[in-house]
View 1: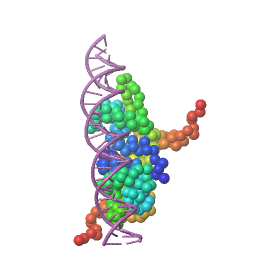
View 2: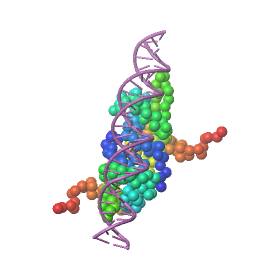
View 3: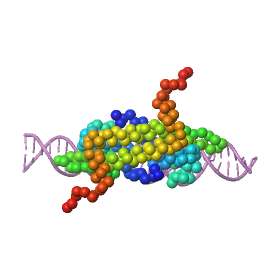
View 4: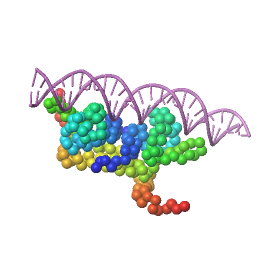
Length: 119
Length: 119
DNA sequence: GCGCCAATGCAACCATCGGTTGCATCCGCC
DNA sequence: GGCGGATGCAACCGATGGTTGCATTGGCGC
């Protein structure tokens, strides 16, 4: 298990900029390489490349409107991606639980510096 | 939001091989670059580099035993990573729901072409 | 209808990263 | 003490993310 991961999907959403692109597209509903790049710390060309990757992964699809190429999120595919995220998370979570101790681990670091450290 | 992501953590677990490494370490409890590389499709050196990355991200830590350098998972940090995974997932999921349609989207593509499209 | 401007596409180039091979080193154990 | 297995370091390679620069194209206003 843990292996049934669609690697193209993962690497698509594994890229920080691409996650931002997806976020922006979800916010605005639609966007072009140009408009998105205005709201990102990278150039239009970089965004265009990312959009191409996302397109190949099926996470977005483009429609030409006038001289613009508008992209929007493919809800179904993004839903699949989310499912895979949580799949991996659940696998590890289960494994950690089986090895016990996860609860305390989270606890400890949620409380972070609160407790013990005193010079 | 969505921005509060520890990028080092994400890129650490975003790498397929590193996820496998974490899996193996969780299974076995402990491992060295050499032993892990025997169960992975990459060389010992590649594994060593990945372990270094995971170490820098705090997801594993090493202990020298004899002439071996044994790595084990840091449960607390991996728990944080899992939390971030699900955080991103939940953000997108919520956004998708708000834009409505997620249910039908999954439905549609689970049922695939079954329904409406007829030329 | 025409021209200008903006948006896209393409190409070259660079840095970083994952991966490999090869070699040096080092440290237990017999 | 020496052999052997394990680690570490370095050079090198291909893919990828990013940039700049330029060519192209196609809308829209005049």
